[in-house]
Amino acid sequence: MNQKDVRDLVRLMKGQGVGEFTWKQEGVELTVKFAGVAVGVAPMAVAAPALAVVPAPVAAAPAAPARAADHKVVRAPIVGTFYRSPSPDSAPYVNVGDKVRKGQVVCIIEAMKLMNQVESDVDGVVAELLVDNASPVQFGQELFRLSPG
Image (cartoon, rainbow, N blue to C red; front, side, top):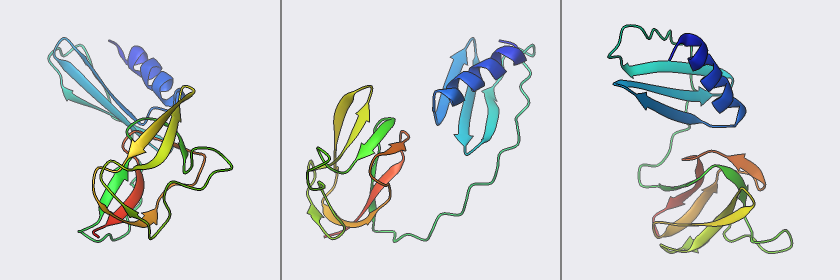
């Protein structure tokens, strides 16, 4: 893979809204993460010296707000559109202050016209909603913060 191929692949992935991807071939591993508009390309291991990838500058990530160490996070299992309720005229699955149980549905993520229910993997109380309704979300993005309870 030459530099033009790498640039084309990065443009394609960024245009598709992919937050991160890894490519492996013949002893070469390439991981690309998108943060805002900056793109970082960094080879993990290069077996053949014919591939020369120069990392692009990566903008510094904004500092994360301080979080309680005992809080658990519900993350997006897929890329898609986040919905708090099963339909526009229904009540949200959960609100701040609600108790949730492991396995309880807390939201839906629509991906390719399929509605995917997202379940909490822990018991807790919803301490914070981190995503607005009908917003696009990336794989692994934090959706809810749960406190013990």
